[in-house]
Image 1 (cartoon, one colour):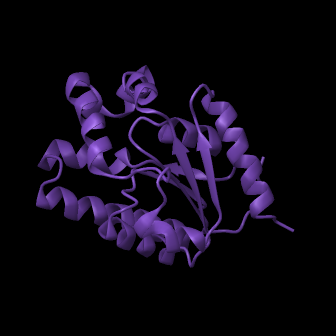
Image 2 (cartoon, rainbow, N blue to C red):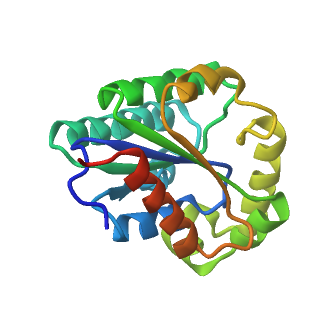
Length: 200
C-alpha cells in the first residue's frame, strides 16, 4: 500500500482504446491512496445528451475534466486519470500540459500498450461494456478502435513526437499489458510509484 504520498498528485494512465486503462486504474486505486477518474466518467453523460465530438460535447468534456482535476489538486486528492492521448497532436499536448500545470508538476505517467488483436478482444469484456455504454454497439466500437489506430499515434513505439519534451520532464513507466492480469500490471505500477515518489 502507498501511504503518505505527496498530496495533490496526478498519475496519468494513457494508451489506446481497450488497452486496460480503466480496469488497471481500478486495481491501482484499490492498492493505494489514489482515486480513479477515468475518461468515460465525462464522456458517457455528455455523449448521451449532445453526441460525441459535437461542439458542446467537446467544450463541456474539457471543462468538466479540468474542474475535477482542479478540485482534486486543491484538496489534496491524489488522482489517477485515464486518457487516450494522441502523442503526435499539438492540441492534445496543450491539454495535457495544462493538466500538469494544475498539479504544479507533481505528475507521473504510465503508458500502457497492447496489440490491436488483444485490444479488440478486450473491447467486448463485461466490465468495459458495463461502465461504458457507448461501447455496447460492439460492431461500431470495434470499427472505432481500428479507425483510431490509423488516425493517431497512441503509443511510443515510434517515439513520442509532440509529447517528447513534456514526458521527458516527468517520471514515465511503459508497460505491455498483453497476457498480463490487471492486478499484476497494477502491482508493477504501485511498486514503481513507491520507488519513484518516496515518502521519506
